[in-house]
Length: 139
Image (cartoon, rainbow, N blue to C red; front, side):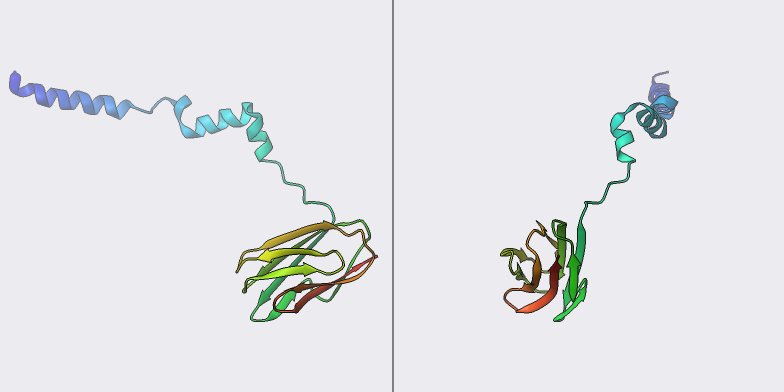
């Protein structure tokens, strides 16, 4: 009988481990279903984010060429402006007339936000390279 104890113990262990996790209320799908029906956080995660108001401008600089929202860009006075710049060189962006600057990191989108409260036409440039990205026409 002693020779059969390890075999019986192994069989009992296998039978018990085979039953683990069969409770349907503990399954990931059941947990997710109950969380989504009762959790306020789950309801919030399904909402669509509202884009910020104002002008959204994006400019890319690669190989010395500027693409995206370039040229003369009209913006109403008082609008909130978000300018996102991605560049293949590290530099500094300068918004003339507003005296705003921000550092650009290589290949990392950088956002510059401000309220367009000063009417006129203002160049936005890469400060060190002297490359004009766009002219902001506020008015």
